[in-house]
Length: 305
Image (cartoon, rainbow, N blue to C red; front, side, top):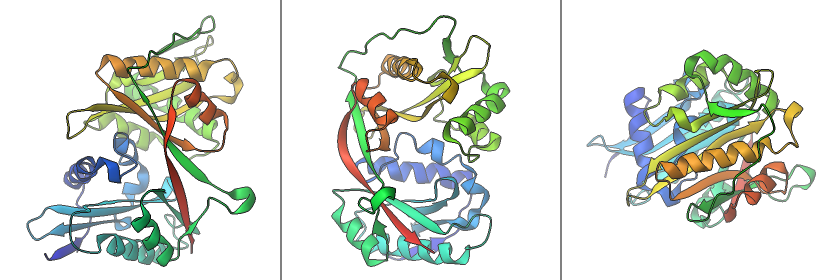
């Protein structure tokens, strides 16, 4: 089979990229929440996106240097009898070198991989990526957590005068972005990125939740995604969730998470997933307290430029 490497052609390719991931859900970490990542301002740099297709036009692989996350996101058809993974990594390495010192360049890029994906790990290490699982104080690894919606969801007490509701569409994007930036202490989230999530065909408005404080300001958010797998199973994912520092340790994170879980269940979700760092920080404990269990370990690999 002849494989054609080509540039990114816009919206039509976004649909094909998502379809490729959904065809191989066990091979990819971001399946249900992929629309969130495909909305980011990484796509303002089309030169940082590459696709590989068969002569028939069938998409076989894609890669994105995902600037806000410092991540190389990619997916490929594992059934194709070619070293697609190697081709993807070769292109990503070359592009990362070309853009050093530019607005979309970074001094290091990361790849996340399931600990069970030994072939991918071998390729990453061969190409100079190093696991960050045991590098001292800056060690970094993650976990994929999940919960079955057959497990009951406990009701949560909400402090007086706080209430949860869906985001008020485009009118509330600016307020959401301000909150998101404060929660994660980063300016990566932008109004353009958040606005694009509202326009994705997979977006469901009443699963995009915010918590309003008594003074009217947004105190927390929880964005939920829903997708139907090829086998007909309906799954949900939480991405992202956060609580403003001024309102932490009041149970608000648990309350908005539980609300999201109930809404996902009402729409037929059978399993809910979340990806988070595996050290026992507040986020890990929050998901664990809501019935999530670790399903797989995720290794983070880094390469410096």
